[in-house]
Image (cartoon, rainbow, N blue to C red; front, side):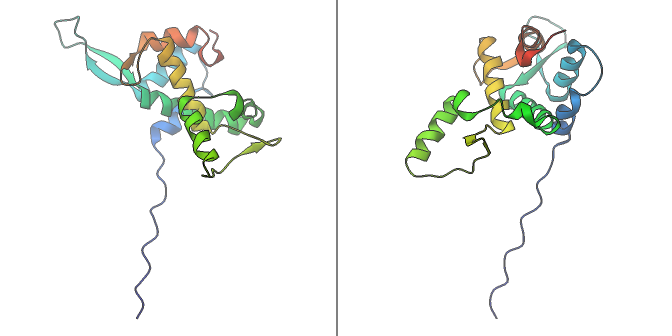
Length: 164
């Protein structure tokens, strides 16, 4: 008898924190309250070297911040598809996107989402680019951790178009 086919892959898993992050902007409250809630979803705890006691400082990694922004964008674009049209690939370049374009020119094809003939960034790509912007403005590398005050300062100074 022929060999049996391999089992189907497991269904994709949705992280609960991604759902919470994506929905966080729909809640009532000030921008400060919303960003604190978002930070609580993804934070890491690190030892605060300035203190002798066991007080911990809230921190967020680049990967976590990128996931948060990507989740936020998925919900934002689903609610208002016109927002997504503002993220044309040709107008929002990251180092990774430039490398992808070079690979495409070398013959690799990529599945594209199009708006009026121009490819759009995915919510994940917008999230990644937004996290890059936040870390760069905070003078952090992608291997550093961002603390709540740095995140809050970036956000309230216009990150994601925020206003109090």
